[in-house]
Length: 340
Image 1 (spheres, rainbow, N blue to C red):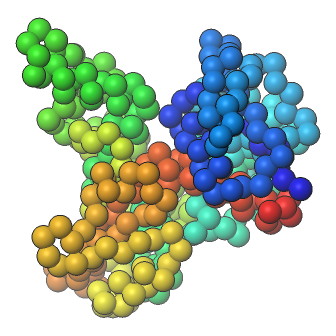
Image 2 (tube, one colour):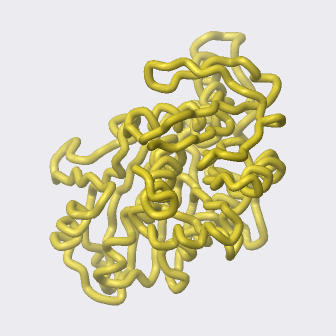
């Protein structure tokens, strides 16, 4: 017996990826509903070898459905998420709406699977921010061994983190540079992204950090350990898919780089590619389309006591969004619905 799963926002980048991953991972489903707004009604999306026509989210009845994977942003989720949850459908939400609510679990299955039991308070589970998800997958096994005191992370985040509009803007700006008269002014991003980097993701908040940077701090504390000190600088780069992060970790106990490499190799969801030779590391273009979080450049930081540096790369549309949501669905199936 399989699940009845609704994918909400099925015509967007993340929604389409959710459908792809449900099929790729052979999640046992009896029925899948592709839901979208009325302006997208009837749009066809792929689910394996099947073509689904989108149904109207506004009139959809969630009663009798096991889970709903939401990928429609905070504003729309605020309307439809509680409706689905009240109907008895477990909501797995990709937006930031519920991440910081104390009675909503924020889950990365490789890191804090046991927290899924907290879903019962509101019938809702939150999916973390894309930049947080890949970092905590790398951080947790090391934290378990040596206790992380402080994390300093600089991100290099792709255009797809801003959705289809971000990818389109990077593409048209890049073309416009080579074609006189077809230059494209920034609309999705604050400045030109093509052949540039932008040290702002999200609005600025009190203290000078951006909301994206604040999210990494708050979510890491909620998922891994509230005692960890985290500081982040989040940068948009002219890459279509795949986020990269340079992470510096200060531990309470000494952790040798060779032991750290062995720990990460054995950890779930991680692929270590760490050869000290030209090209002996993973870049975003190589991570695109893959399930794994790739770790490279593991090395001691001699400027602090008990410090390590590492390079972390992942497909943000997958582990940073759709894959993590599907993994949560699999976790719910095993531990809550007792299927699959």
